[in-house]
Length: 396
Image (cartoon, rainbow, N blue to C red; front, side):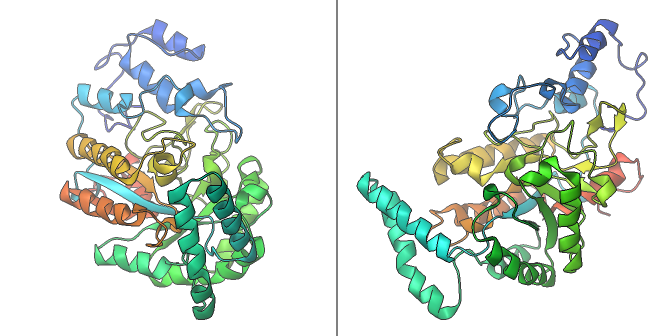
């Protein structure tokens, strides 16, 4: 715990009081009281998720947590101990830019049928704005077909935008479709996957593995998926489970054996913030082995779907921007190193409803507050050195 916070010189019992009753509560799976270190360990090790309620996708939600995800207790402890947070690449804080590539091509046959069905549903329910958006999208379909383009294939433009701001990002790619939740038209994704890898790598982006829906429960499947991407020339160093189907007590431990150095799944699907109570990369704790995993977790602090979808917060772009800027303000004041997730189907200007422009403003807001944007693998590598006590400044 103290190593995680940069307090290697501190000793329990000398610099910090040791309360055996609090640690006994932890051993019983209870949140301790009156001991900041024991409470911090309770959150970092995700003890509250043992035998906890989960949603229909097997996910632990913020609504089930005792944690205030925007007031992480490990950062409170860090400040109370007088420890400085790491300064990633000399900046006040760092944001790892990440994109999940769930549907790289919208106008497949099934995609067109789905859009037509949604348009009909919106018209019958007299939902004017959604109906107008679907109608505009469908009206552009013939021109896309004629040109061989697609509103979801905006990877070159996105990478150019990021490169123009001196940064890059990580794209988590699916490498299989074994469940309907993995998305429509698996044959289209399979055909496009080599082109996806080539496009991202050529532009200086990072390719990560997006472990499929069933792979979250099947390490052998996940291993095969990683090899698919590596076989296409991708240097796969990290991953994120599709649908955020992470269980920190079950499916993080197998990752390092697959040659993966980091994960960036640990976030709440229903709220922004820090699911492990820490706003910096860390090594997840293996309760069974009683040691940290040989893996860096880059915490996922905010996701476009969480902010904008009606099944979660249902915010409009202006409201979502306020939440994001609040998160960045805290990071500028207190430090932080975390990921944000923007899906690649939210960059078509005609249908993105302003979420594409919000992403650009997010990048500018990070820089304006003294932060740095970088790919998840870069932040994970710098964090591994810092967590291991390498004496140089991260990123130097």
